[in-house]
Image 1 (spheres, helix red, strand yellow):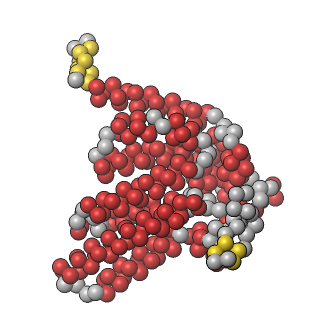
Image 2 (cartoon, rainbow, N blue to C red):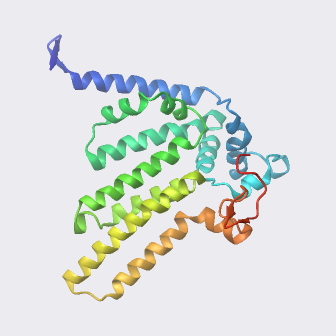
Image 3 (cartoon, one colour):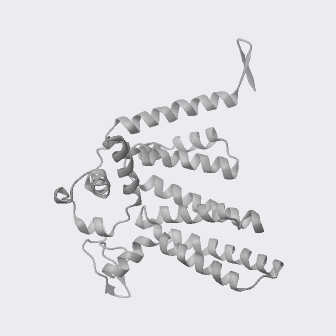
Length: 268
């Protein structure tokens, strides 16, 4: 459907693109201009971001250290980066905003979904708008998880080289690592999805080795590479197990009747 305006043809696609641009600019201005007053933001997100990038000296860091020692910090690392390079504390909100931009790009690049479709659909959700302009890390963590799930689905759809290639592997590893190191509650879901992704990748690699009549040691090498990638993906719980004997330190966890080392209750 086209609308004639001063000799030009303006289609419905152009209309939606303009709407997307207006909404995106509005969300960006809200993110960069407003300081997020939420409790979690000032309770640990911004203090952690400031501590990571040296914006707040160690002697002035008064937030509970057990949280800083054990919590996932990738989201706060990105928040601190934007704060540090701009000099504005509000810039920490851009992590949520750019996670939307990243997701729309991913959907366009890998699933051929027009940006205005995905942007309007996502920003029509009030909670997404709220988190895109705040320091909560739920939105980026869930977007990284969504990318991981969609990439896993993609490698089940594709065959051989279309699935088992370096760019796909890189996106799977990065999205899994980013999700697992941004929000601890997502770690079990990341592990579950990676079980499916890893099984498919090993199967594809085995089929490729059989077809090329290559040495089976290549499969072992590939498996060991996936294991090394898993260390990066689950860096936070591995570190917590090594140092504190609790993958979700400092939160109280009970396994088989044994309470692991902790500093906080489950709902603190």
